[in-house]
Image (cartoon, rainbow, N blue to C red):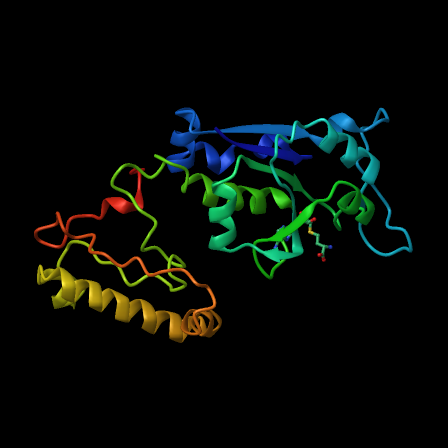
Amino acid sequence: MWRAGVLTIFPEMFPGPLGVSLAGKALAAGAWSLDVHDIRAFASDKHRTVDDTPAGGGPGMVMKADVLARAIDAVAQEGRPRLLMSPRGVPLTQVRVEALAAGPGVVIVCGRFEGVDERVIAARDLEEVSIGDYVLSGGEIAGMALIDACVRLLPGVMGATASSAEESFADGLLEYPQFTRPQAFEGRPIPDVLLSGDHARIAAWRRAEAERLTRERRPDLWAKHHSGLRGKSAGVESIASDNDDGLRPCPRRGVPD
Ligand code: SAM
């Protein structure tokens, strides 16, 4: 079973959003497990102190290396990578998420305050992972985002008919636009091609739209895709094959809420 271990000073934040919808159903069904560890339980003083002032001065507080190291050592790692959520980490990508989902799970350290004493990062070989170029107040929401992205890829979680093969980033491209009933919304019709029943034309339209959106919105992704750096083969196939009017909600989005 894929296992997520989380070290945090706010264990009450979990499972939070991971306890509802797709991830929550999968958790209840035993497709993955979540163990949450309160870092404060590893403090050595009666105030359960986990932070101290930064060496060299400056604002804020820093998470103590000794307390965090004890907390990390208490968690059975079982081959799981130790990740520290951090705005200065390697940006999380779908490729990395796929690799993590294919492994035994993750152990996630959630930072708070100004961050974590550098020495524990080195001593416990923590891999710093960022979820974007902005600063959150803590690593918990970042950790939840990473776990959610992994859990939905676990076998069976999105359902037998579901597939992530056409989602954003699957082929290094953003996803094409989606539509559903009604056929006209505030004067805006669904593009005719999607109602044509011609699966080859639909696939071609979707591919062209995915390329257009990626070119317009993410020149960085487009450049990589175009130069073939990502090296992943395309997986375009019709998802409307059992969909006579072209308007049935697509099941690949997974377990309905
Ligand atoms: N002083 C730090 C800096 O400038 O890089 C920011 C610390 S932030 C207020 C507190 C914690 O939130 C971090 O230690 C990290 O665990 C988490 N965090 C904030 N932004 C994040 C991001 N973009 N990705 C992952 N974790 C983040």
